[in-house]
Amino acid sequence: MKAPLVSIIMGSDTDLAIMNQAAEMLEYFNISYEINIVSAHRTPERMFDFASNAHLRGIKVIIAGAGGAAHLPGMVASISPLPVIGVPVKSSNSIDGWDSVLSILQMPGGIPVATVALNGAKNAGILAATILGVVDISIQEKIIAYKNQLKQEVIAKADKIGKKLI
Image (tube, rainbow, N blue to C red; front, side, top):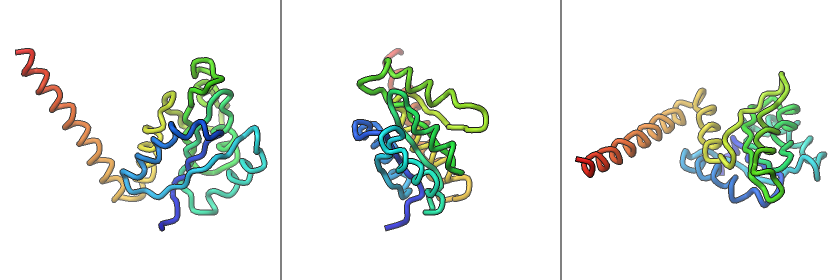
């Protein structure tokens, strides 16, 4: 088994259904990853240890999902030298997900977190692959092929609809 390049973390197992979408995209691009629970509020020592040491373990990108107050992505980004992609998760105690979006999006200057859409873990996986593709041409080629596939799907759908309209 290859050492993980991407770490997918979340504040709670209730986020797993959403965060698995990032894992699926990493598998699609054949990128090794790990997935775990690291709560900023309930296990702050665990979060600090994770964020301080992920780069030493060979991790290149962190995808952090969180709902509600959603402090995990920002706190990890404040400690780790790695790029962090935040996934706001609409949780049972959230304010329609806006609290999570704003908590991750509104980071102070100096602590960037790349933020995807609410429940947008699929895009987080693609963004992590794109970041890795900057230095790994084989991953970049997979990204190019993926985008070409998306293009062909749209063209095929447009052709199908166009035939129905004529």
